[in-house]
Image (cartoon, helix red, strand yellow):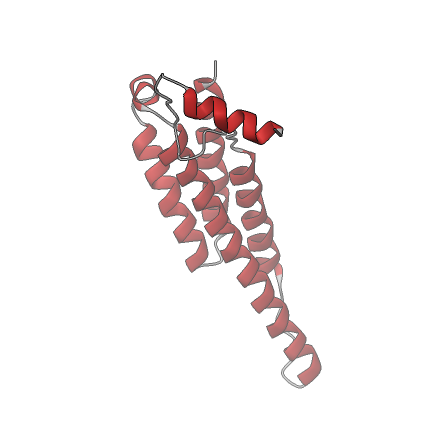
Length: 148
């Protein structure tokens, strides 16, 4: 019998209850992905804010400008969504009632950070992108503190 078969047989024979924090008890959670996504949003926002539209008479330069803005905007929005997803995974799968007791503002913090992910998608605003990075860093601090 292979290893998987032995594990399955043992699991089926188990008399005790199995408790898991999510559907698959992997125990692998981290805040780095949300922080990376927020940093990506910030950098792309910064690049978009620094762009200068080309002269009207240069059709090729105008097309390249539009193409660049479109691509940077798409990636910025995609990473804002990734950030939101990563935060919500921590919120829905990792954080538990005891974390809320220890960090009473956790619900509001995650809720506002998720809203901030939506805000940075709507506009090219470096202050909003910086605020998202700060909110994610605060959540990452709570996450790190919860593991102690």
